[in-house]
Length: 329
Image (cartoon, rainbow, N blue to C red; front, top):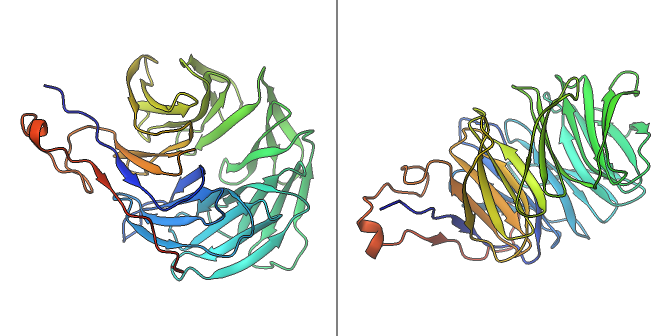
Protein backbone atom coordinates (compact mmCIF):
# COMPACT_ATOMS: atom_id res chain seq x y z
CA UNK A 1 0.00 0.00 0.00
CA UNK A 2 1.40 3.39 -0.99
CA UNK A 3 1.93 5.97 1.71
CA UNK A 4 -0.25 8.96 0.96
CA UNK A 5 0.86 12.58 1.01
CA UNK A 6 -0.41 14.34 4.12
CA UNK A 7 0.15 18.09 4.02
CA UNK A 8 0.35 20.23 7.12
CA UNK A 9 -2.20 23.04 6.95
CA UNK A 10 -1.18 26.44 8.30
CA UNK A 11 -4.18 28.65 9.03
CA UNK A 12 -4.32 32.22 10.28
CA UNK A 13 -4.71 34.36 7.17
CA UNK A 14 -8.19 35.62 6.30
CA UNK A 15 -7.67 36.36 2.58
CA UNK A 16 -5.78 34.73 -0.30
CA UNK A 17 -2.08 33.96 0.22
CA UNK A 18 -0.26 35.39 -2.80
CA UNK A 19 3.46 35.03 -2.05
CA UNK A 20 5.80 33.13 0.23
CA UNK A 21 9.53 32.83 0.78
CA UNK A 22 11.95 30.78 2.87
CA UNK A 23 15.05 32.03 4.62
CA UNK A 24 18.35 30.23 4.39
CA UNK A 25 19.26 27.64 7.01
CA UNK A 26 20.25 29.35 10.28
CA UNK A 27 21.46 27.98 13.66
CA UNK A 28 17.77 28.07 14.66
CA UNK A 29 16.46 26.24 11.63
CA UNK A 30 14.85 27.99 8.67
CA UNK A 31 11.83 30.26 8.44
CA UNK A 32 8.88 30.97 6.16
CA UNK A 33 7.17 34.29 5.47
CA UNK A 34 3.82 34.64 3.72
CA UNK A 35 2.19 37.62 1.98
CA UNK A 36 -1.58 37.89 2.03
CA UNK A 37 -4.32 40.18 0.81
CA UNK A 38 -5.39 40.59 4.46
CA UNK A 39 -2.42 42.97 4.86
CA UNK A 40 -0.85 40.94 7.66
CA UNK A 41 2.28 39.02 6.60
CA UNK A 42 3.16 36.12 8.89
CA UNK A 43 6.40 34.49 9.98
CA UNK A 44 6.53 30.76 10.69
CA UNK A 45 9.02 28.08 11.59
CA UNK A 46 9.81 26.63 8.19
CA UNK A 47 9.92 22.91 8.92
CA UNK A 48 6.75 22.75 11.04
CA UNK A 49 4.64 25.72 9.97
CA UNK A 50 4.36 26.86 13.59
CA UNK A 51 3.27 30.49 13.74
CA UNK A 52 5.88 32.85 15.21
CA UNK A 53 4.39 36.27 14.63
CA UNK A 54 2.47 38.69 12.42
CA UNK A 55 3.97 41.90 11.06
CA UNK A 56 1.40 44.64 11.69
CA UNK A 57 1.57 48.00 9.95
CA UNK A 58 0.43 47.81 6.32
CA UNK A 59 -2.87 49.43 5.34
CA UNK A 60 -3.55 47.37 2.26
CA UNK A 61 -3.06 43.96 0.69
CA UNK A 62 0.48 42.63 0.91
CA UNK A 63 1.59 41.29 -2.48
CA UNK A 64 5.19 40.30 -1.82
CA UNK A 65 7.33 39.17 1.11
CA UNK A 66 10.90 38.01 1.60
CA UNK A 67 13.47 37.19 4.28
CA UNK A 68 17.20 37.77 4.15
CA UNK A 69 19.37 34.66 4.26
CA UNK A 70 19.87 34.57 8.05
CA UNK A 71 16.23 35.49 8.80
CA UNK A 72 17.12 38.63 10.77
CA UNK A 73 15.30 40.96 8.37
CA UNK A 74 12.02 40.77 6.50
CA UNK A 75 10.66 42.96 3.73
CA UNK A 76 7.11 43.29 2.42
CA UNK A 77 5.49 44.93 -0.62
CA UNK A 78 1.96 46.27 -0.38
CA UNK A 79 -1.01 47.99 -2.00
CA UNK A 80 -0.63 50.97 0.37
CA UNK A 81 2.14 52.25 -1.95
CA UNK A 82 4.90 51.20 0.47
CA UNK A 83 7.53 48.57 1.01
CA UNK A 84 8.43 47.93 4.63
CA UNK A 85 11.55 46.47 6.23
CA UNK A 86 11.14 44.65 9.53
CA UNK A 87 13.30 43.27 12.30
CA UNK A 88 12.37 39.61 11.88
CA UNK A 89 13.51 38.75 15.42
CA UNK A 90 11.52 41.38 17.34
CA UNK A 91 8.81 42.00 14.75
CA UNK A 92 9.42 45.75 14.84
CA UNK A 93 9.05 47.89 11.74
CA UNK A 94 12.46 49.31 10.76
CA UNK A 95 11.74 51.27 7.57
CA UNK A 96 8.84 52.41 5.43
CA UNK A 97 9.82 53.07 1.82
CA UNK A 98 7.27 55.17 -0.06
CA UNK A 99 6.40 54.46 -3.69
CA UNK A 100 4.15 56.07 -6.31
CA UNK A 101 1.92 53.04 -6.80
CA UNK A 102 1.23 49.50 -5.54
CA UNK A 103 4.42 47.57 -4.73
CA UNK A 104 4.45 43.92 -5.79
CA UNK A 105 8.00 42.63 -5.18
CA UNK A 106 10.86 42.96 -2.66
CA UNK A 107 14.26 41.26 -2.63
CA UNK A 108 17.41 41.71 -0.47
CA UNK A 109 20.96 41.58 -1.77
CA UNK A 110 23.10 38.78 -0.35
CA UNK A 111 24.62 41.15 2.23
CA UNK A 112 21.19 42.65 3.09
CA UNK A 113 22.53 46.17 2.44
CA UNK A 114 20.23 46.92 -0.49
CA UNK A 115 16.59 46.21 -1.21
CA UNK A 116 15.16 45.85 -4.72
CA UNK A 117 11.50 46.74 -5.29
CA UNK A 118 9.12 46.65 -8.23
CA UNK A 119 5.44 47.32 -8.76
CA UNK A 120 2.65 48.94 -10.70
CA UNK A 121 4.55 52.13 -11.56
CA UNK A 122 6.75 50.00 -13.90
CA UNK A 123 9.94 51.13 -12.14
CA UNK A 124 12.65 49.11 -10.42
CA UNK A 125 14.10 50.78 -7.33
CA UNK A 126 17.24 49.98 -5.34
CA UNK A 127 17.18 51.28 -1.76
CA UNK A 128 20.34 51.59 0.34
CA UNK A 129 19.60 50.09 3.76
CA UNK A 130 22.58 51.91 5.25
CA UNK A 131 21.31 55.27 3.93
CA UNK A 132 17.52 54.82 3.89
CA UNK A 133 16.84 58.56 3.49
CA UNK A 134 18.81 58.72 0.24
CA UNK A 135 16.88 58.64 -3.02
CA UNK A 136 16.79 55.13 -4.47
CA UNK A 137 18.38 54.25 -7.78
CA UNK A 138 15.60 53.94 -10.35
CA UNK A 139 15.61 51.70 -13.42
CA UNK A 140 12.90 52.14 -16.06
CA UNK A 141 12.09 50.29 -19.24
CA UNK A 142 9.09 48.03 -18.66
CA UNK A 143 5.82 49.13 -20.24
CA UNK A 144 3.67 47.16 -17.77
CA UNK A 145 3.41 46.66 -14.03
CA UNK A 146 6.34 44.73 -12.56
CA UNK A 147 5.29 41.48 -10.90
CA UNK A 148 8.64 40.18 -9.68
CA UNK A 149 12.18 41.54 -9.38
CA UNK A 150 15.14 39.48 -8.19
CA UNK A 151 18.87 39.94 -7.72
CA UNK A 152 21.04 37.46 -9.60
CA UNK A 153 24.68 36.68 -10.45
CA UNK A 154 26.01 37.75 -7.04
CA UNK A 155 23.85 40.89 -7.13
CA UNK A 156 25.55 42.18 -10.28
CA UNK A 157 22.38 41.75 -12.33
CA UNK A 158 18.62 42.07 -11.85
CA UNK A 159 15.87 39.88 -13.29
CA UNK A 160 12.41 41.41 -13.68
CA UNK A 161 9.07 40.08 -14.93
CA UNK A 162 6.22 42.40 -15.91
CA UNK A 163 2.72 42.58 -17.34
CA UNK A 164 4.24 43.64 -20.67
CA UNK A 165 4.86 39.90 -21.15
CA UNK A 166 8.61 40.22 -20.86
CA UNK A 167 11.38 39.07 -18.54
CA UNK A 168 14.43 41.31 -18.60
CA UNK A 169 17.99 40.91 -17.41
CA UNK A 170 19.54 44.21 -16.29
CA UNK A 171 23.10 45.21 -15.52
CA UNK A 172 23.07 46.75 -12.05
CA UNK A 173 25.86 49.28 -12.60
CA UNK A 174 24.74 50.62 -15.98
CA UNK A 175 20.97 50.10 -15.41
CA UNK A 176 20.79 48.85 -19.02
CA UNK A 177 19.00 45.78 -20.36
CA UNK A 178 21.41 42.96 -21.15
CA UNK A 179 18.79 40.67 -22.67
CA UNK A 180 15.04 40.21 -22.64
CA UNK A 181 12.53 37.43 -23.25
CA UNK A 182 9.04 37.86 -24.69
CA UNK A 183 6.12 35.55 -23.98
CA UNK A 184 2.75 34.85 -25.55
CA UNK A 185 1.00 35.29 -22.20
CA UNK A 186 1.59 37.33 -19.07
CA UNK A 187 4.30 35.91 -16.80
CA UNK A 188 2.73 34.61 -13.59
CA UNK A 189 5.86 33.82 -11.56
CA UNK A 190 9.64 33.78 -11.60
CA UNK A 191 12.15 31.95 -9.38
CA UNK A 192 15.96 32.20 -9.47
CA UNK A 193 18.26 29.38 -8.33
CA UNK A 194 21.60 31.07 -7.52
CA UNK A 195 23.69 27.90 -7.18
CA UNK A 196 22.62 26.52 -10.53
CA UNK A 197 22.10 29.90 -12.23
CA UNK A 198 18.67 28.70 -13.37
CA UNK A 199 15.61 30.88 -13.90
CA UNK A 200 12.13 29.33 -13.67
CA UNK A 201 9.33 31.21 -15.41
CA UNK A 202 5.61 30.33 -15.58
CA UNK A 203 3.10 31.70 -18.08
CA UNK A 204 -0.20 30.21 -19.20
CA UNK A 205 0.11 26.43 -18.76
CA UNK A 206 3.88 26.48 -19.37
CA UNK A 207 6.80 26.06 -16.96
CA UNK A 208 10.10 27.07 -18.55
CA UNK A 209 13.69 26.84 -17.34
CA UNK A 210 16.40 29.23 -18.55
CA UNK A 211 20.08 29.84 -18.02
CA UNK A 212 19.85 32.95 -15.83
CA UNK A 213 23.00 34.54 -17.28
CA UNK A 214 22.28 34.11 -20.98
CA UNK A 215 18.48 33.62 -20.82
CA UNK A 216 18.91 30.63 -23.14
CA UNK A 217 16.06 28.14 -22.85
CA UNK A 218 16.96 24.86 -21.12
CA UNK A 219 13.57 23.11 -21.25
CA UNK A 220 9.81 23.70 -21.07
CA UNK A 221 6.91 21.67 -19.72
CA UNK A 222 3.19 22.13 -20.35
CA UNK A 223 0.91 21.41 -17.39
CA UNK A 224 -2.75 20.34 -17.49
CA UNK A 225 -3.96 23.69 -16.12
CA UNK A 226 -2.93 27.34 -16.00
CA UNK A 227 0.07 27.61 -13.67
CA UNK A 228 0.66 30.47 -11.24
CA UNK A 229 3.94 29.34 -9.67
CA UNK A 230 6.69 26.72 -9.89
CA UNK A 231 9.76 25.83 -7.84
CA UNK A 232 12.82 23.69 -8.51
CA UNK A 233 14.27 21.36 -5.85
CA UNK A 234 17.71 22.52 -4.58
CA UNK A 235 19.28 19.33 -5.96
CA UNK A 236 17.42 19.67 -9.29
CA UNK A 237 15.73 16.30 -8.75
CA UNK A 238 12.16 17.55 -8.96
CA UNK A 239 10.09 20.62 -9.55
CA UNK A 240 6.60 21.42 -8.34
CA UNK A 241 3.91 23.70 -9.73
CA UNK A 242 0.45 24.91 -8.80
CA UNK A 243 -2.32 26.90 -10.44
CA UNK A 244 -5.97 27.25 -11.32
CA UNK A 245 -7.13 23.66 -10.75
CA UNK A 246 -6.27 23.65 -7.00
CA UNK A 247 -3.63 20.92 -7.53
CA UNK A 248 0.08 20.66 -6.80
CA UNK A 249 1.99 18.91 -9.58
CA UNK A 250 5.35 17.21 -9.05
CA UNK A 251 7.67 16.50 -12.01
CA UNK A 252 10.99 14.79 -12.55
CA UNK A 253 13.33 17.58 -13.66
CA UNK A 254 15.53 15.39 -15.87
CA UNK A 255 12.76 13.65 -17.80
CA UNK A 256 9.98 16.26 -17.24
CA UNK A 257 7.68 13.32 -16.47
CA UNK A 258 4.75 14.10 -14.19
CA UNK A 259 5.33 11.97 -11.07
CA UNK A 260 2.21 12.77 -9.09
CA UNK A 261 -0.37 15.43 -8.32
CA UNK A 262 -2.09 16.33 -5.07
CA UNK A 263 -5.25 18.22 -4.31
CA UNK A 264 -5.31 19.75 -0.85
CA UNK A 265 -6.28 23.38 -1.34
CA UNK A 266 -9.83 24.62 -1.84
CA UNK A 267 -8.89 27.35 -4.27
CA UNK A 268 -6.30 28.19 -6.93
CA UNK A 269 -2.66 27.83 -5.87
CA UNK A 270 -0.87 31.19 -6.09
CA UNK A 271 2.64 30.31 -4.90
CA UNK A 272 4.89 27.29 -4.29
CA UNK A 273 8.46 27.12 -2.96
CA UNK A 274 10.88 24.42 -1.88
CA UNK A 275 12.49 24.71 1.53
CA UNK A 276 16.25 25.40 1.55
CA UNK A 277 17.03 21.79 2.56
CA UNK A 278 14.65 20.40 -0.07
CA UNK A 279 12.76 18.25 2.45
CA UNK A 280 9.42 19.99 1.86
CA UNK A 281 7.67 22.52 -0.29
CA UNK A 282 5.12 25.12 0.74
CA UNK A 283 2.08 26.32 -1.16
CA UNK A 284 -0.18 29.33 -0.69
CA UNK A 285 -3.71 29.55 -2.01
CA UNK A 286 -6.81 31.57 -2.68
CA UNK A 287 -8.34 29.59 0.21
CA UNK A 288 -6.25 31.61 2.69
CA UNK A 289 -4.03 28.76 3.87
CA UNK A 290 -0.47 27.62 3.46
CA UNK A 291 0.25 23.92 3.17
CA UNK A 292 3.53 22.10 3.70
CA UNK A 293 4.14 18.98 1.60
CA UNK A 294 6.82 16.33 2.01
CA UNK A 295 9.26 15.85 -0.86
CA UNK A 296 9.74 12.20 0.18
CA UNK A 297 6.42 10.98 1.52
CA UNK A 298 6.61 8.93 4.73
CA UNK A 299 9.96 10.26 5.92
CA UNK A 300 10.26 11.38 9.54
CA UNK A 301 10.78 15.14 9.36
CA UNK A 302 9.38 18.13 11.23
CA UNK A 303 5.91 17.16 12.44
CA UNK A 304 5.73 14.13 10.15
CA UNK A 305 6.39 10.77 11.77
CA UNK A 306 7.30 7.74 9.71
CA UNK A 307 4.64 5.07 10.14
CA UNK A 308 4.10 1.67 8.59
CA UNK A 309 1.62 1.69 5.71
CA UNK A 310 -0.91 -0.48 7.58
CA UNK A 311 -0.99 2.06 10.38
CA UNK A 312 -2.23 4.67 7.96
CA UNK A 313 -5.50 2.79 7.55
CA UNK A 314 -6.66 3.66 11.06
CA UNK A 315 -4.41 6.55 12.02
CA UNK A 316 -4.33 9.55 9.73
CA UNK A 317 -1.61 12.06 10.51
CA UNK A 318 -3.45 15.11 9.14
CA UNK A 319 -2.34 18.16 11.04
CA UNK A 320 -3.62 21.71 11.07
CA UNK A 321 -3.03 24.83 13.10
CA UNK A 322 -5.55 27.12 14.77
CA UNK A 323 -5.94 30.68 13.56
CA UNK A 324 -3.02 32.81 14.71
CA UNK A 325 -3.65 35.45 17.33
CA UNK A 326 -2.90 38.94 16.03
CA UNK A 327 0.08 39.76 18.19
CA UNK A 328 3.32 41.45 17.26
CA UNK A 329 6.15 38.99 16.95
